[in-house]
Length: 469
Image (cartoon, rainbow, N blue to C red; front, top):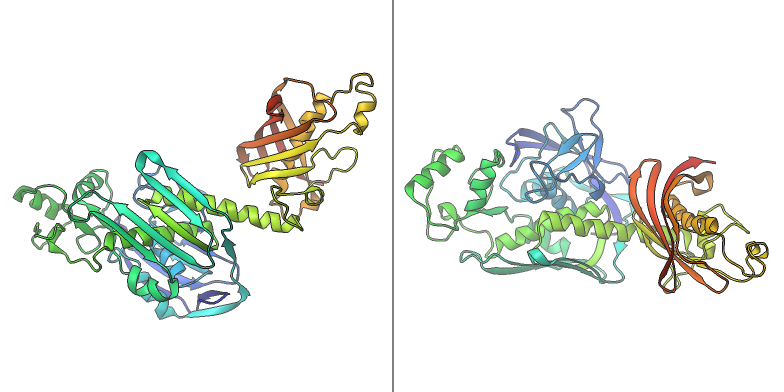
């Protein structure tokens, strides 16, 4: 689809009912500037914020939760079931678009991404001047949930390919697999039309939870997984508020509905995966393998890919030459931290997960100036400097994403549960592990541990704030 960013040529709208909320919704796609990304906007909410389609804004533990759809939220404003919209945008290679809604859930349409695809094609697609941004997976990334039999892997390749495998243990479906190898050639015809599906027992359970208020037999494939009596059919008829008869049929699908593809459920799982992985916020170059995926696991994997992308961005920003086993060398560290001799106490960063974790190294030599007075006959690294070295690793964890690093400082507000376990002497190498506990706009809480040859020598909890110089 080319290497330039894309948006649509003109606004386009349509209306329908949200699957879970049942709310009547108008959705309007509008062109957006380069590097804007994909954002949702609720026109029915006063002072509504724009909600970026990023994994940071995924809302968990709502009535409509990540098991049944993907919900985004910002400042208390929600947009439910966004995955089909996002899949359509990714499938058409649209990077920048404003998505306006006058309710809290996009229309379900026929349960596939095709209604959105058709409208976006109607609006027309145009290239922009800026280059697309990619995350290129250079080493395998994996995720698994053994209890639920879920496995994911992202493997290096020069394109975006997805393979999904599922086993529903149901005679009507059985085991299925599907693969997309060319988004440009296959998405519109082979995957966008795949409709959402559910088992009959799930329909009844969801209805009892007050969900699928906008669902009907035209917006989902309902798979019969238990014996039905006439009274059950009558109840389903009332449940969906439909006039026509509800029949069992002989295909294992309610009302004998024909599948668009033999493996349509599996294709829809792949469609959902495309939409959920869009929350990584960047175009992906990788081979994605997924066994028994669902929204919850999709989101966790999208989070891993986004963290990988952030790490690569930051590394490119500060590290001139990539060194094996090193994320930031001393030259990169000096671009991030304002500290200088004799108070720069970090030599390398060897592990880095943006906003979550950093591991730094301090090589303690006999030439350290503090050994001249602490203590000449038995040199020991002062405990306050061990804590300071850990704090500097924490500073890198906090300052790495600031636009103006040179204009920022990290001030530590407090330290709790500080413990010194063993002395640190010349020749030792400190390995310092810093993990984020809490993060709020400009204040943070971290836990730090320092090791020498695998032995814990110091630990502390630290509170810090980012301030202007």
